Length: 265
View 1 (cartoon, one colour):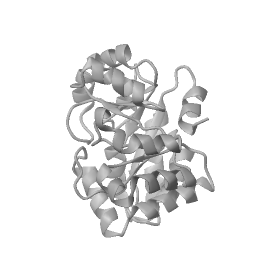
View 2 (cartoon, rainbow, N blue to C red):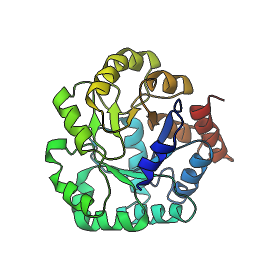
View 3 (cartoon, one colour):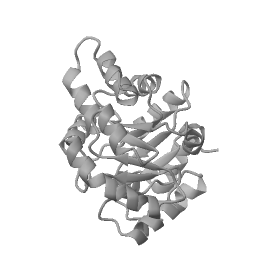
View 4 (tube, rainbow, N blue to C red):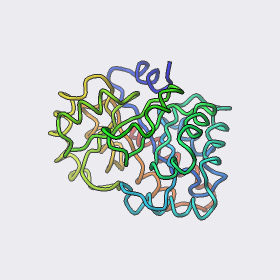
């Protein structure tokens, strides 16, 4: 069974799963594996490992910054795959590669999917591939039994939500607000998310629902994910790393933040 599916099957009835997005190679190439393992020990249920790209569409300034740093330090798809392989020596946490189609095309779609399977990747999120045009990768991903996770947003029609649900595996990524990634005020997100999640609930019936974009605290997470299966945090995590790196014990500060996101203390 896919590790993502297993994780959702094992979760408690009232539990909200926490998925953390971290840009591979940020803040340096040597820290990614340790960070992922530390995230798991402090409550992370899933990991979205960002594949940096120089021309992102959906990323706000925080994740753009982390991608620029990782690119400058020499990150590559091969190095990201090696990181996943290293994590797999120590952990069975579900790992999803998240990024844009351009680097995948350059690497080779079939080669990318085969290598991902070999190292233990559990899913792909590719925000710039419309659900109707996913044939670019869907066929090759299906060959190695890696699901693609599609995104829905407040401006997604009911029909497209249903199609995203039909084609997704693992979960559907619910973008809580329109716009790029970034930590926002809880009030800004909660005002738009309630109506949106109600509509998602009517149209996304096959897969679990994870809510992302704008969550930066335990309170945000519990409020925004109230009617979903869990929440996703990216920009607030990267901002936390940016604030403390490379101070002594910087990882411990980051892990404390992760623990507080999941458990509120």
